[in-house]
Length: 416
Ligand code: LLP
Image 1 (tube, rainbow, N blue to C red):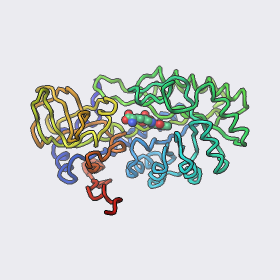
Image 2: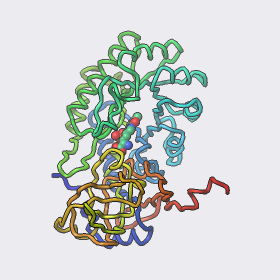
Image 3: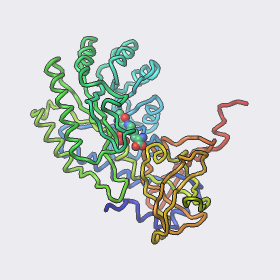
Image 4: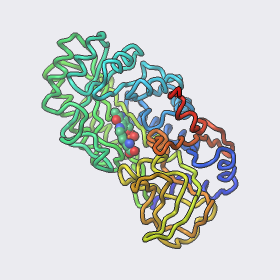
């Protein structure tokens, strides 16, 4: 049984009501010290177990520059893992230096490649044809390719990003050729990246993945005489979304990965640096949605209507993802089973299905937790609903870090 790190906060009806009154609902709220904790944990673990390491925060998980700045204040060398010109822009707004960033596109347009190259971020290429497009714009000083080792793992099939069904990466049997091609083109410095899935809490999987990565780096080095400067395991460090999930033990995990690294590369000084691209594990459990009950309906099922639907949090509708919900104030004993739904005209609009929950009434506040990663970032305007506000909670003090969108904002480009 793991208790959510912000569980006590939701009992504080004064703070929660003050946020709801100040900024309205639904609002995304981020707890500053939890972000700091998450960044420190990975930073300290990597420096304990690895001679050289680098962290690129996966900006796609949440690109609010205020949050990126908090991460950077804890770890000044922090880079960004960017997958679009917009994510490079967000990193720049937070003073994250492009030279510390990696750009992992897929099926990138020429314009995206040119932007990344011009900004000076390292390009991690998804295919040999990406290299062809890149070389039309210039000669990068260093590149990496994204390996698809033929297997992957994620908490849902939809977020498994390697294996035969994945659109990402270069298949194992083509990876040597890709590096050969880059070497022939005159590129001299290399890394290798492999992001095989998101939401992994299984230690053995990480060992299996890194073992496969080293199998390939060793083969490439032997064939081409390349010395890899870095190996990136991508993101994918899971967080416990459910009470019964067991969180990763960072010390145990990274000590195993370190043993693997220095078994394969015994000379620590010349061994590749380990790069990690955390998204979920940095910001996931630090953010929640504060939402209000709009209506209760006893139909063939019992429904709780809330003002945050699938337009505010896509994960349950898209993947069947589970997010814990807490009633603000006293949570109380469970009273029945409810589907929690928003105001969207889609029957997939669910935040939770058949969830046991205490007695609840209109206007009560509810916290939807673990919404910091891929929450706001994947929110959208369906039914012409403006996006939520974003709020930073620093101790008991709160401030707006992104205004709630307005209906006028949605139409600002229409010029009617
Ligand atoms: N690096 C690359 C190249 C990635 O594609 C991703 C995520 C990450 C790093 C960060 O992975 P993380 O640490 O967050 O697992 N929208 C899904 C997750 C999709 C992840 C896609 N790539 C979700 O809501 O669970």
